[in-house]
Structures are given as C-alpha cells and as structure tokens.
Length: 197
Image 1 (tube, helix red, strand yellow):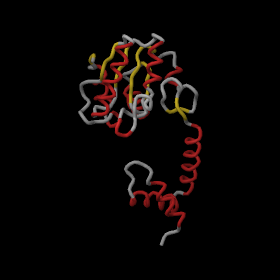
Image 2 (spheres, one colour):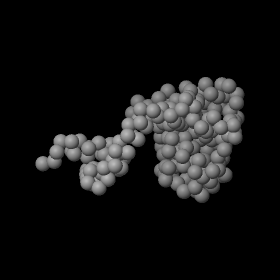
Image 3 (cartoon, one colour):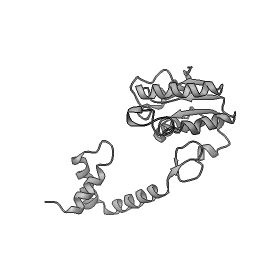
Image 4 (cartoon, helix red, strand yellow):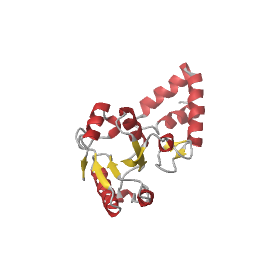
C-alpha cells in the first residue's frame, strides 16, 4: 500500500487533461525519485501562477498585469478584434504572426445545457467594447464545433446591432478541429481567406 501523501500527489497530477492514473503515477515517481529540485521549482511556479495570474481587463486573456501586453501595445490595430475561445488560441495565433490586431477571449463557448450563456463568456463585456466605436471588424475564430458555430452566430447578431463588420476564419480549419492543434501555415491561410458572415 502506498503512502497517503504519494497517493495524494498522484491524484493531484490527474487534474491535468489527458493524464490518467498510470501517467500520473509515472510523473509523481519521476519527481520524487529523479528530480526533486525540478519538483520544487514546479510547485513554487505553479503556486505563484495560480496566485498571481488573472484576466486582462480588456481582452480577458490570462495575465499577471491589469492589462496584457497585447492590449497595451501601440503597434496593434485596435480596430480589428479577433474573438477566440481560450488563451491557448491567442498563443497559437500569435505564433503564426499573421494577425496584428487585438483579441477578445471568451473563456469558453455558449452551452445552454451546461448553464453557459452569453454573460458567462463575457458577451456583455464585448458589447460594451463595441459601444465605443473603435472596433470596425470582428474576426470570429471560435472553434468549428456545433457550440463554436452557435457562439459565432450569436456574436454576429451583436455585431450587426453595432454595425461592425464580421468575418469568420475560413479555409484550412477542419470541421470539428480546434485552433490550438493547427500548424501556423494552416492558420495563416485561414486568416488570409476569411470571409464575411
């Protein structure tokens, strides 16, 4: 029978996506047997990140600042706003280097069955941002899933009320795929071939 603390560590690793009992056990034993220093660094960094990282006041991405570096940058086109579901989507788009505007991160998608409505994904905040007339185009980059498409349609209706142009990432993204798994070439093509909704 294993020590209760080792079992607790194994269970802690299981909160990560895709980590089952065997993988969690392997990670726990690796840190305890072969890399205690790495485990200490991981623990300190994780504790600090959980404590200090919050959401950008403008785009809602993850940051330790009040406003993230992208929103603060004077080199970004403030009139183009790319709508994504998660901070990892921002990271993928930024790695491609194709987009030079700003973002709005939904932190999910509409899912009435799960109790996730427009307010839970910040669409009230997005609408307030559209009220100031600085945004002239929304580029919707929600995942091409049923929920992502429903979210895109809802956002399109908000944009129409504010007379803001709406486009959707097009070519290159497979139906049912997710942005964080695309290569930068596919993502670049999707941005270049976006179409009005």
